[in-house]
Image (cartoon, rainbow, N blue to C red; front, side):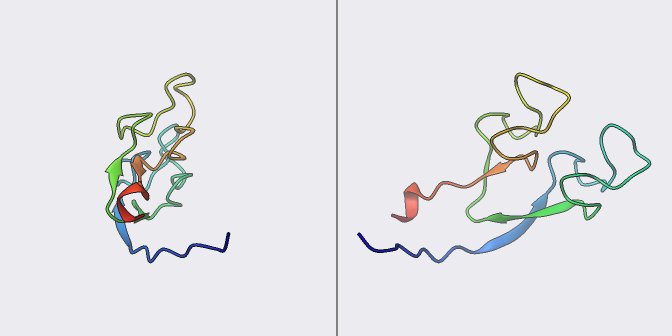
Length: 83
């Protein structure tokens, strides 16, 4: 079976970890660890709220850590619609 290539467009979406402020959630003295202070992350479109954290970027099990599914961005992308 060969490689499958899918054309995916990326657009900026508000970072779920810092909620667009660019400041780290735990200490507001340093840049956000997810978006590196930009306040947004590039997300494959169409973007959907992450099902694991409901888009709030916090891991369900360890609430001091970014969501393990979306890496704290708050966003997910499903390739199922494009296949």
